[in-house]
Amino acid sequence: MVAVSLAHLRQKGQLETGDVKFSWVEGVASALDSENISKGREVGAVEAVDAAGGQALVHDVTFAFVLFAFHPDAPVWTKKGRIKLKGQTTG
Image (cartoon, rainbow, N blue to C red):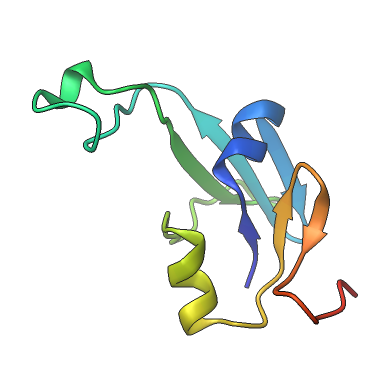
């Protein structure tokens, strides 16, 4: 499992880790900011592809607390590097 913070991916544009290439794509508005979704702030979307062949991969965009609730040992790539829950090593 590989996880990347949306803010980090937005800043970098692309990130390759292991055999997965992530890209941030403009054009998705937040559904939480306004009654009219088209007036919500730009949050973008994520594309995940196989780094070797470019084939689209099944992926999920979720909140960090959801990731850690179901996958507490999952590392997350952020602006500060690879992090894990408090007390875990970043290996």
